[in-house]
Amino acid sequence: MKTLKDAKIGETVKVVKLNGAGAVKRRIMDMGITKGVEISVRKVAPLGDPVEITVRGYELSLRKADAEMIEVE
Image (cartoon, rainbow, N blue to C red):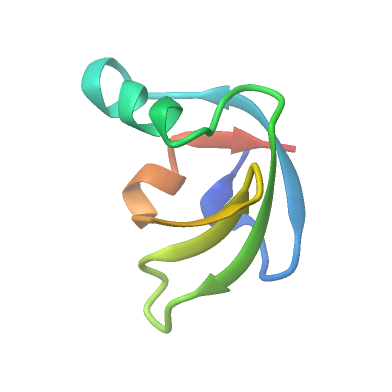
């Protein structure tokens, strides 16, 4: 099981599953991260938090804890 946190800079991955429950999962889905969408990893901060991604044509920053909830392939 690979998560978005494990993806390398420049890599494009596809969302397989969203873990988490309730408001946290809803917030991730509201940002446009849903099953089947492709995500491109643009940058990672020096300490690994946050991760900057491109999803559905726009740029987004995610905390490391949120990126761990997103399973990718």
